Amino acid sequence: MTRHGFVKILILSLVLSTVFVTLVKSAKFDELFEPSWSLDHVVYEGEQLKLKLDHSSGAGFGSKSKYLFGKTTVQIKLVEGDSAGTVTAFYMSSDGPKHNEFDFEFLGNTTGEPYLVQTNIYINGVGNREERQSLWFDPSKEFHSYSILWNQHQVVFLVDETPIRVYSNKEKRGVPFPKDQPMGVYSSIWNADDWATQGGRVKTDWTHAPFVSSYKGFEIDGCECSITTTADQNQKKCSSATSSGSGSGSGSSSTSSGVTTQKAKYWWDEPIMSELNMHQHHQLLWVRANHQIYDYCTDKTRFPVTPLECEHRP
Image (cartoon, rainbow, N blue to C red; front, side, top):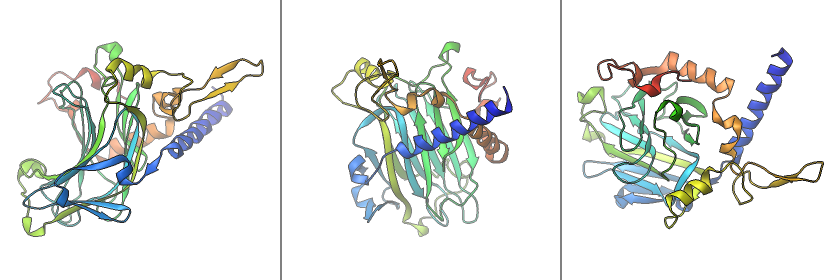
């Protein structure tokens, strides 16, 4: 490829990435979500929502709808000060024992020690795919955005639009991929001092309670699934590359010959979204080189045989 051609592709990738980000719809909390437990530990302060954890309870919220593919983002400011033993989670999950799940888990620490972010992926009820990273900022001082992008090709975890983890579709190699169960979007704060901080060696200091995580900037741009719709109907509705129906980026256009063609129904079905672009790939490599602390793919104690999905990762 010529240098000119390479530059054109790079510019196109960056432009499309920007367009895709701006298509995401932002909404107030109660338009998309509702508290799911411990309502007395959920606090509304204008455009912000706060979840509190004390010795009596934590708290959580969940989306009013479930989605099959798309992108969800929330801005979070994590517990300040001594947060050891606490976990703030932001995740997507389906229902039942064979559920699929994509997890952000923010593991609190003692004052002055950095937060760790653990990601995990469950497929058909099986997890054990943990990765842990440090962050390149203090997540308790300011709001930062955390996103999950999910399509038929990949699951991408992003922090301030920087990818920190990718799980690619490798069904052709016999690796299961989550693509047929609608998922809700959730967040919660709870006490996990049996494992969260230094393997459970540091316990929660309740004299610092209540522990508070703050939220704003709620965004979901996904294919919404009705509870009355069958799995096959949902998959057909949300997975087709072309359609005349409604959806982000949907519609039709006319060619110069007068023939009407269909655009992609959803922006996440565009070919460019099937993998990271070059800039994102470099960002992911930087995160792995500078902030990766644990990767289940390299844990020979737990997995003497390397899991199949770990081969040829992006």
